[in-house]
Length: 616
View 1 (cartoon, helix red, strand yellow):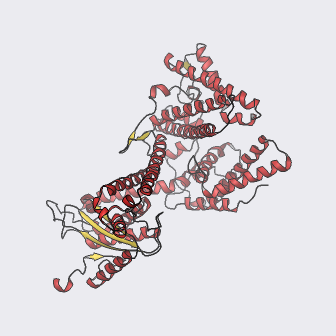
View 2 (cartoon, one colour):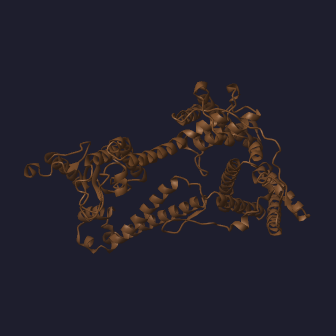
View 3 (tube, one colour):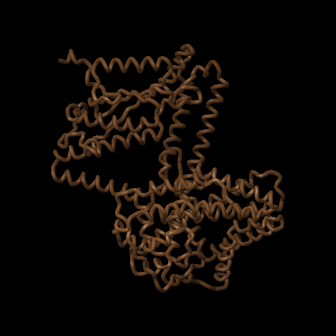
């Protein structure tokens, strides 16, 4: 039987969980021939831990691994192959025509799957004209998710043959994972609905009603996050609309002789119009949800849906309310200071790049630098309180991309030391370099050393720039990259920054609290520096006809900080609580989790942006 079967059933590929000897040979020959004609073969290994296989029912529950090769006969190969094929199908959406052959290896101390893949279509073309031969972070993520999804769906097969306690443990883990995922995806519209007043006629971005202040604030934040996903740049769809706003303002200025202040006002009005139109689109989606579906109410939603003043009152005697109040306050302040830090940082960098600056303009540059540092210090302060919050999901992908760039540079250095390449012809050296190091045109090392050195220098510049951007991104979350991994790092000691916003802490305490002389002195010194710097920058802007830009320097906050510093310098030694004495408690209902309305909400925002053509 073995002689007749030969390698039949050993491998799987292209949607077939078990390839015959004949089919395996055909697929292998096809991949080899295409490789010989210039296609790129992607070879990778998937490694599965024993715990993962056991939890997903791929390994016998009673199996005990003791030595190399024990996994043979105890792995559900069909289930594992089908899971991998599902992952590859999900991953293949980013390829033109992906084909693959896989073999599961069970004769070692870990279960592995060896995969050879090739895009028979055009694929992603690299700068050197070859197909890309590595999986991206997105490809890996899709592959993992596809495998996990299949095994999750087949959990019942394992659970039917397991013990009762084993069932309970796995069911609990699955329910928790599902619940967290559902809350993350569907919790936003659920909370929007809970905060809204009962009368749906009041659901409008243009409403000035007290009960619409909080809903409008959080819906606005949702819309702005879609239009401007990060601080540095807007989304592509919004960028085009914003360009049309600026163009309209420029046309009006030229035609009507408007001042720069009037031009900026037109731009701000256009931006606000777009945001409000998108907000009303979100409300239109929420209004379509039948009232009979709104049946959910929880104590935590009662707390988090209250307005800020009411929540501050309730927090005095309610520990959960106090936690929610501080979480909300600190998160909001962290976001605000992070946004302002990046704004002043970008403005200062633009000032430094400007040519032919006058000596007078130095007052503005100095203030932008001071304001940048001040906002960064307060960002660090609130990072201290919120270290338990997870960082941006993009950080993992950025780290993976950085490691790939570093690995590529290291392989280029290894190629230089590989003497065997120098004994090969140009074509053989090129193929060898691609196969062993994943890098083409290795013959340039000895045939065109100047070209090779420029390639290496370019790779080094890309790595240095990517490292710099990654480290800057990590600063937003109180972390740093030490060249090997991500670590926690505080740019400033907490004692140096904790008192820099005393003028904003009246809500933080239910009663008056004393201020130590050391903290008062730190606050007074920085408040005076900030106020004097602001005055010099303001005077420069007014002298040069740029009075409309003074508002961008946060004059109100600077003055409030100075006024409180003067009180402390005059003998005041405590911080007065400004929490109100009475609370207005919001009571409402919302929909249960089960349908993701964010899909419709995002779609209506896109539709609103795409429908925007002009501003008149």
